[in-house]
Image (cartoon, rainbow, N blue to C red):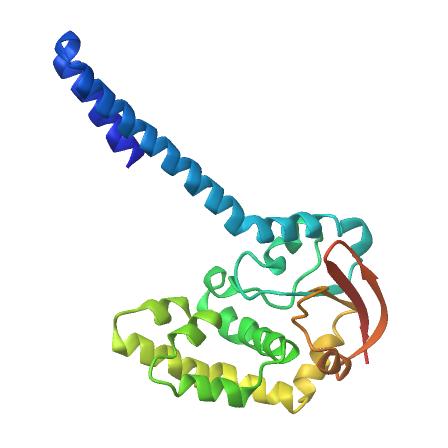
Length: 238
């Protein structure tokens, strides 16, 4: 809008030249002033809207020295959207993460099904999700919010009933059975953590995403460290 109005004002001035009345000049100036004020409010709103996220990212960047990553570490961090802590971990540590929200769109179908879905099931279990609640949420008339939360973005926003049905079927046949295995502490879930020497869980101090009880069912807590707004828990496989 600002760009179009600027070009429109320039066209008016060029077309009329010196014959342009002061009234027209005043109206154009007022219009540009309104565009400027509108931009100020938009910038202020965007700043306030993303202030919490930006503060979290700044606090997370200071965890590098406290993290002291080693070879053989696995990092578990909050990942409900692409702006969460998990997406920023590669900037402060080279260690792999358990599961990130955008992993599905970064992998080809085969590793997505064979690698990512199982890791996602582990993440969901540790973050207090369970298979029964997912099944109930899928049974509602419009489960698009759940599909979007689980990373089935294309199916959630698709206008095609067939694609939406396919997404629901994939959750029911691929993800939920894996989550049930994790809930039953299947040997596959236990062996997964034994591939790592240490597991580091990064969580917010005030809004905990992960269940200490469920973490303790797979891992042995060795210590904790607190940063600005975050707490890091260091585990080893049982």
